Image 1 (cartoon, rainbow, N blue to C red):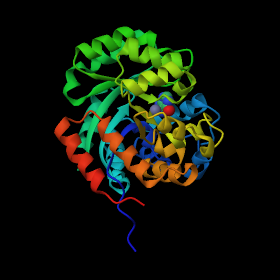
Image 2 (tube, helix red, strand yellow):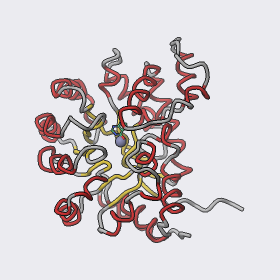
Image 3 (cartoon, rainbow, N blue to C red):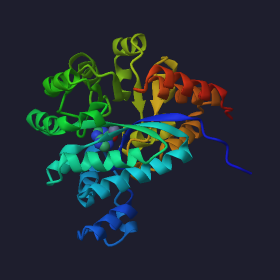
Image 4 (cartoon, rainbow, N blue to C red):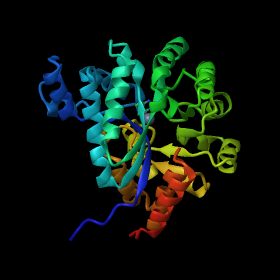
Length: 328
Ligand code: HPA
Ligand code: ZN
């Protein structure tokens, strides 16, 4: 029997560096003549037991050292985009972390040319979102935005990621203002480990049009009412939240509460090479563990297009496809 056709969907929260599988770490290390501190793929994968966001980020940034050339970034993105078909992903808005590469001497141009080369060769429509590392300075964010300016036609927006607690959105008010003045869209990670006040700051000070994660918003009823009223999308990543200890298990994830609050929730993978699955596995896991039913899954898939930066005619075409798809 053939596997059922997956629901068409958009992925709005995936870090391209978080799609770097251990096998590719070894392949690129060999290609670039880099010595690794792990003896095998299995030994590296065995280290993927995280207690919180920082414990993940330490290994996420360490593995990136193998990404050096335009071809490396092209191969990385091409592998992700190939995988999209299996999960029904038709459109992806992909985060990348240029500061994690420029600080190792890799120019922004190399990163962007590599990623856009893969996008140009793929059937999946994809856009790039340049993320600022919130645990670096605001000046460093300004610098990377300036360095990216000659390539802005390849970038749809800016985001904010990395270690959240102690690095509030307010630190980046000016650089987001500049990015928006340059015509870029704005999103931000907030309320993953940080307090609901960071979600409010991301909306008020950064002009964030979507909140990445946002799970802690539920602690503030007024914020929940605002998110509902303004239809602010939350890009939720269930397997990531469990692997990083935001919830002790998937069965106690607050996705059902977010849905009951009628928020514009989407389901995403975050860093699929590290957290046990791509977006299709996140959909399957919430169906299995949280009792999310077929019509709710269809709603989540529809939300992913509604919350995307696609133009209205393309959104409408994808939404019609979602409506026509049979769900179990
Ligand atoms: N949170 C913050 N920064 C990140 C993440 C995340 O889940 N993944 C990659 N960078
Ligand atoms: Zn993320």
